[in-house]
Amino acid sequence: MTTAICPGSFDPVTNGHLDIITRAAGIFDEVIVAVGNNPDKKTLFTIEERVALLKKVIDDTGLKNVRVDYFEGLQVNYARAQKAQVIVKGLRALSDFEYEFQMALTNKKLAPELETMFMMTEHKYAFLSSSLVKQIVLFGGNPEGLIPPVVFESLQAKMAEVRERV
Ligand code: ADP
Image (cartoon, rainbow, N blue to C red; front, side, top):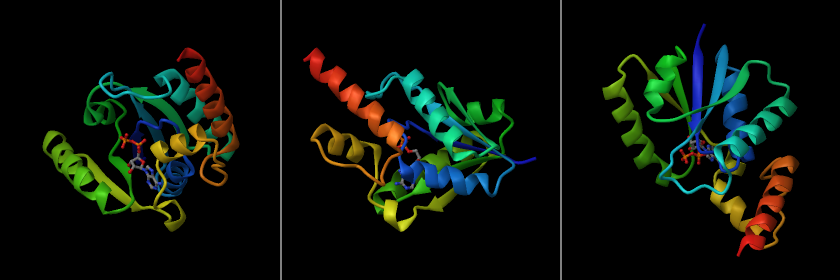
């Protein structure tokens, strides 16, 4: 059985992420979407919120071989603990390449038995990122086709909550 990990911040999950997860689910026996908890990284949603949102969205896809989890620390340690063989990453524009290249080589050094595999983004999501979606919703734009409706609702609620605090 081949298990793949799709790691990321997912702050929040977008249709670009979902495309990669769905395609990975068609190739590997099991896919674990692993939400990273990096205390140094400032996120809009808490780790619990990001995991809950992903669970809802994955549930709606009906994909039976995908589960959602979270991890702290190194991706390779998490992958080993889950007995995964592959780390799957999505690649957008050239700007992703340098960072992902560095990460893949570092992970190979730390855990030579693990493979990192890249999937090229679907062209309609090539420009899409969680940050872009947050900007669109913050300034009242319509992110239709970029995020699932349940993510849009959560983003609107979160923005309202943040606005109330300031
Ligand atoms: P990180 O904060 O670790 O970069 P993200 O949540 O932004 O995590 O992304 C997780 C993974 O999903 C990364 O491999 C990233 O390249 C990929 N990804 C993000 N957006 C897209 C997209 N629009 N198309 C394809 N892959 C994407």
